[in-house]
Image 1 (cartoon, rainbow, N blue to C red):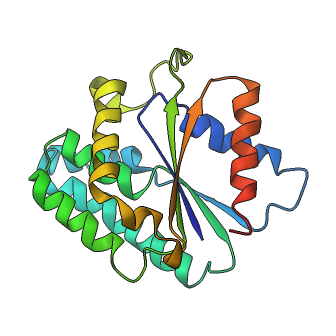
Image 2: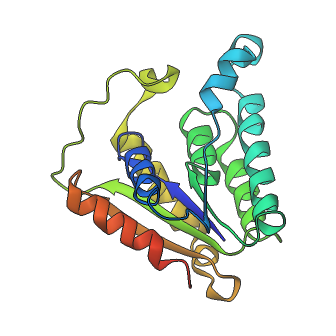
Length: 202
C-alpha cells in the first residue's frame, strides 16, 4: 500500500507526516515506511533550472522518481505501507501551475498512469487548511517559496482530483481519497495519526 499525502504548500503536510512518524518511535515503525524525494535539493545540485529552465525536463525528473517508488511499493515494499510527503499529484499540479507542459497533455498522462498496473492500493490524503485556520509562519523553506500561493495551488488540486474522478475511489483496486482539514493544533495531529493507522487493514 502507498499513502500519498498531498496538498498545497502551507497546508501542514510535512508537520503532520513527521509528527506521525515521531508518534511511532516508541513502537516498531513497521509496517510504515517514510519517503520524501529531495526534489529542490537535487534541482539545485544538478543545476537543472540553469540548464533547462522550468519546463518538461523538470516535470519528468520529478515523476520518474515517483514512478519508481510506485513500482517498489508493489514489489520490494509490498509488505510495507509507504507514506509519501508529496507525490504523484504534487508533480502534476506543479507542472500545471508552472506551465511546464500543456495542461491537457499532463492530465492525459496522469490519467493513463492511474489506469495503469502500478496505481493500486493507493490512498490519497488530501490535506488542506480548515476554513478559518491560520498556518504558522514557516519562514524561508526552499527555492519554490517565491511561487507559493496556497489558494491557487488548492484550486488546481481540486480541479485535478475532480477531473480524474472515479479511478481515485476504485475500491476494486484498493484506491481511495480522503480530505483532511488541518486546524494546526494537537487535535489535528491526533486525528491525522488515527487516520493513517486506520488504513492498515483497509
